[in-house]
Length: 561
Image 1 (cartoon, helix red, strand yellow):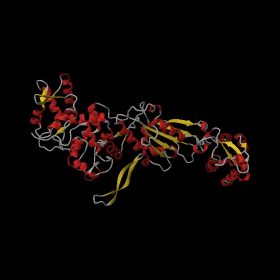
Image 2: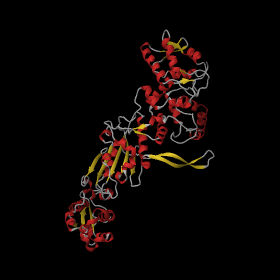
Image 3: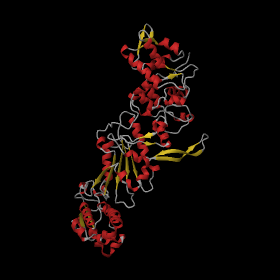
């Protein structure tokens, strides 16, 4: 018997393993192995070393798969921190066999660690001369590299006795060693020792978890953010236009994931043409080049915002330091949510840990994509759940025209927070502006909108059609300093947003009553705006003017912007 168990590149230490991982390019990119070398990180000498020997060690480590022409590695290792990388090395070393697809020999394969441990257990003093074992059972080169690799084990002890390299097991660990060998031989047997794909999948994430007796279900996580558990996973904030729905989500977003963190969340706005393919993902044509460099069109799975955040959350789960990830959906009811969510709708039912109660069957496209991004085989992702470090928040404005209704089954899977018409008006109190060129009056924006809302309520116009504090943008109605609102900006916005909204939507059937101050000109939007330029809030019904409590202003006291 004579074979060399490893490529002679570097010892199997944590530092060397991390250095090996660092040379790899983007594992999600579509490469052929022959094209990979140009994107290997480092100098030209590094590329040569990789091509000559480093890739052999990566293959023998079970990290790199050469069973086809496509670039394939275990992506989950890139998410591991040092503690889990050390665990991987232990898992690999104890289940490694040779010869294998990357160690050519006609000899019968053996689980090297198990065979060594069995000899130690059966020996008189529970120790063996390592060099003797290597020469008898292996007989090739790289005995020093194997010796260093074996010392990764927490059960083996190394001693140099009378010029010999001795490996031994303490008597207190003998039973543990017996049980470990039995477990490895039963759960990680050698099936087809020349099959590259089988060798690669031997070191999948699910097998890593099986070896250490931990759950491979990455959905039940404990977030590192103490505040994270204070927030609902599925949350819809709704209210009238301008009540601060998006502002509230932005504020909570910072509390959840931290300031200036653009990497851990995505924001999407739904619209009537938005679809499942946009939201979750689908195959789309993408430009590419054939082996001769000619431009061609191929098809690839392009993930949507839901799938991108899902992958980030699952990747983070493997780091051992889980943190929250957030998907923000603006105007959720402006799309047909039943069609957009599709089967993902089932995942919104969460248990007490925040994990989906009911998994869904992943399509072949999704299984292949997740295997490519997260590592392992597509079959590992036959069923998927939303993990509890993934949050989905949305805003909803039921006053919009042409919105899609939500059914009860969809609604019950969300926590709803209603923002009342006056709930967030603190910052706009006492903020005033002078309106009108002929009749000048100073009016407080907050009092004006309340007066308009009260009058609309008397006209039986629902609250969700009324004006929230920030129907006009916060940047306009909350000055950086003082209480004086920029007059020109306010006037332009009031005409383009407030008057337009009231005229075309909220008070469409009550124009003559609402805009009574315009007289006969209240039937045309452009004429109402002209009158507004001249008399300001005088365009409205007298009841609104009185309730707004505007104050006459002398021309010389007007503060122009």
